[in-house]
Length: 509
Ligand code: GLU
Image (tube, rainbow, N blue to C red):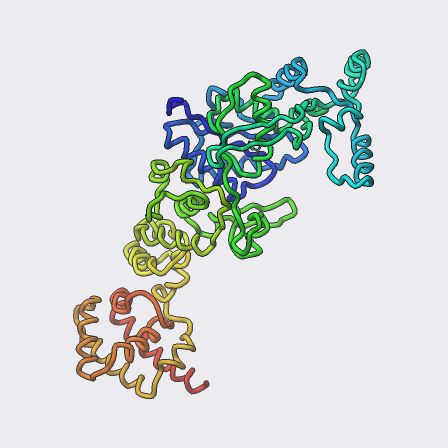
């Protein structure tokens, strides 16, 4: 296959918001397409109308836009193989169901829901909890294999509801080579007669999926491991229709950080991290939080997701979307489940905030800064705070002292570092500050050092109290940078106020 013929699709069912596992599947499809100069398609699989959730399709598209993984073909985008929403392709599928009937690969089944339930209940009583419609049981059911042809014709003519089922062959080995897992072999005795076409005139997922993959010229089906059990049926359907099979690649599951279970949509908020790309508010007003709204950058989210089941084979961890597209290949996707690690996710975000320019951060925060703060001041605040921030909002939250006087003084620092001689030393340092003409970080630092030398003091003895009085806390960016940013007047002021306040706190304790 020439590289240019690579066509892959992400085919979600709009049954709710897209979980991060779904985004990872979409991302791998996108990266594989880009790596092979191919086409990435979005197809909405909405044949199960009972599970349709309003807003889910828009959510998927919004999530893709945020992540920057725009499909080349899809609903609202267009392409030569549309429509890309299965409910709009309804009329296409019947023909193929009919073809399968004609070639005796499928059959009509007239069993009512009650009859099926009865069968299941009886089987349960006889110690068979998982009754299946299959090569054995089909012989005692009401279908076109057991009923005389005249009766079948009559039932169809009188519009008796029916489904079309796959006539699963007996005792055949179905084989296919999965791009990630290698050879997969399943005996058809372990497979049931899946419904391909429903009584509501809609195909099931299985039929619509393979018809569309064929018609849309999909070269590689890259999807989650949960679809592996369906693959043998799909392979048989391609064969039954005389079509070439696409290549298959089943991606490893995403596992919970606290165990081996599958990461589920409820884990996130329960364990304190998002599981969805964007916020999702259910009809009952239940909020599932999203990475975007929590303050993650899409670049960090994508980078983290790419590493959940894939690695580049080198030490490099930070990849832009473009770099990922260049490096990605299915050969480096792991078979085993990928454990989600919220701490590593934060780490990725920290790397991205650190490498962001102060300019772009100031722009991101433009609505959060007080209006009277000048452009240059905003940029300096971002420059000073970004090294210690995880999210952009931390810059303003943790750097509030760069905008206004401290609202309090860290009790722990006071009890640990505030000694009897501290106020006097600080006052001496304050006098020196008063004499500094050019109030730059380097000048302040030089003066500070010679003051310490003169007094034979260690760095911490005055620096920490100085920081406490000016910022209210015990840690932060370079103290001389902070002082230079605030200016001499403000620093002197804060020291004076701070000395009174801290002494008060000290005396109260
Ligand atoms: N509609 C299926 C889903 O919701 C698609 C599975 C596949 O990619 O074949 O995930």
